[in-house]
Image (cartoon, rainbow over all chains, first blue to last red; front, side, top):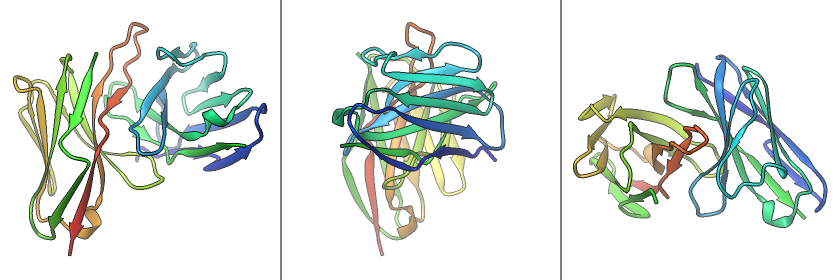
Length: 115
Length: 115
């Protein structure tokens, strides 16, 4: 149990376009989902937290108008990178947490390359 | 600011021996500490969670200790196998002003088990 999927696994887009990444909890309901970013040779950095039906909470330094997060159901959260630029190229990973539990289950990640 | 340090970037261990990884933190009193495994190009996989009132936790060949006085956690893999080779991440809960409780990660220790 506790499987999280992400789609797509990789995406290449042109500068100025928008990209949507989906995160799904497949076998449990996730009260909270998180979005992280990981640059090469670096650790994961929390970008934002989303609770189903609520607005996302963004970490300091993360532009909420650039990284749009929607958590419309207990099994789906989406991250949209708007007006992407080459510096947004990174590995984006989501995680999900069950209600009442502290451990997080991570998706396989999405490799975004902006040309 | 919160800081997490993992003892070394890389650790080479002979197969069959016990691998011990260290995680130290400063400027924080976490409610719990988690260990994850990450393989190249993949999302982290949850291994163990230990709470501030717990001294030790075990799961199969894995053992985690948590010393809140020293602000340190040790992660042990006994009877190590080449398949245990991966990057191991230490993570603490974040309590940001927005009420988010995502994770802050160390940079990880790249463990190599040599046959």
